Structures are given as structure tokens and as C-alpha cells.
Amino acid sequence: MPFTLSGFCEYREEIRKSRFITFATPIGSPADAQAFFEQHSDFNASHNCWAWKLGDQYRSNDDGEPGGTAGRPILAAIEAQDCDQVAVLVIRWYGGIQLGTGGLARAYGGGANKCLQTAAKVELISRVALSCACGFAELALVKLRVADLAGLVVEENFTANGVELKLAVGEAQIAVLQGQLADLSRGRILLQR
Image (cartoon, rainbow, N blue to C red; front, side, top):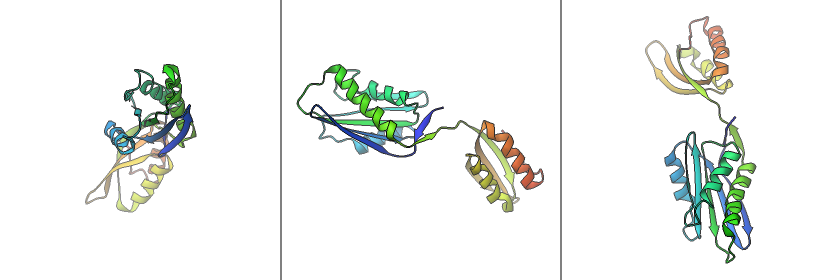
């Protein structure tokens, strides 16, 4: 089961006089990743190498390091930690000692791996889009039932007769939620895919 991060995290280490700082954060889009890299990159540093993964999309950048020694090892660390919807930035200040291609790959990939290992993670749940309608008096209880099952209320539209809701709920919780909503409304609230 894939995971994302619950928030921003960082990891610092020094390898043969080069300083490395790794930042990681959850993202919702490629634009989020780019904004994160622009905000946290240090342009006084020797290199700002990064990678991000969002479902089937991914990108990495070596930022002047030899090809394949920075971005790809960072991406490999994201995948090794079974993470998704994550961006990782590793900043290096060169300390005067050459690390070699293997040493660079170990430094960048290792820093990303250690940062992600220490980060607080949240399991990613695949959710199904559903809709239903309820009365005004039932709205708070419907929202509570959805939240209890780790679902989301995506949209609320108020009408003259009540509220139309768009929900996102895990496949395994749909039958449970349908039963709870039927009990709550005496069978009036029906979930529709």
C-alpha cells in the first residue's frame, strides 16, 4: 500500500566535507513540486538536485552533477520507501573532496532514503466518487459518518429541499456507509456512483 507524507520533513548530514540537506514534502500536482523546489532551493549551494513522484508521473533533476548520480537515486529512494505524491530536494555544498559517481549516488539516494524513513507517513487510500442527497438536519451526521470511514466530502450544494453531496469513499467502506446512512434516514439517503 503506497504512502505519502503527513507534512514537511528534513534530514542533514556531512559526507567527506560536503554538506547535504534533504527536504521532503507531500504534493498534489507537478506545480506543487515545482513551487516547493523554487521555495527551498539554495542558489548559493553547489547543487539543488530533486525528484518527485505523483501516481504514474515522475521527474528528476541532477542539477549539474554527473548524469544519473543524483535525481535518479532520489527517485529510487522515493520508490523504495513505497511513497507517492512526494517531492524530495537534496541540496549539496561541495566540500572539496570528490565523491565519485558511486559516492554521489549513495549520498543523494541515502539522504533521501533517511529523510523519508524518519518522516511521518499517511497511507494513501483509493477512493470511489459517490453522490447522495440528505436533509439539512441530517447533514452533520452524514459528514460525521463519512469522516469516521476515512472518506471525504468533496462538494456540498444546498437546494430548497436539502443538500446534495459529492463524496469520495474507499471501496471497502461503501456498503458500511450505505447501511449507516439508511439507518440514519430510514432508508431515504441512497449512495450513487
